[in-house]
Image (cartoon, rainbow, N blue to C red; front, side, top):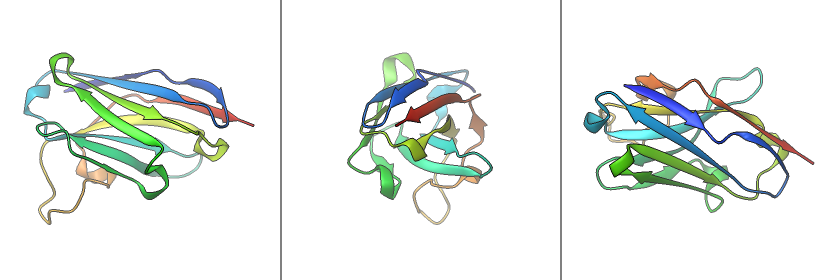
Length: 127
């Protein structure tokens, strides 16, 4: 599975940005697609996830109500719509793919839940 993100850029605080992730390879077998960000000097921070089959979503607490993940099954693409962006959300954003659910049934919020990663796209939010 190969993942390629696009749509990053620089925006002012309060503005919106839409990221996209194109999946190729055996993407039809995937269970879910997630978004993470890597804050400077820190590990991956969970943003949200969408389940490929039914489109159900789950978001990190600080993203709820502002971020929306959608999918386009016909194009094997996932989109992350980010509204009311904050300067502290400046980071490299990654999409990731998971082959299956967690054994404990909890949401796929950990980096280790995903086996495939894109190269990332930079999002910069300025005051």
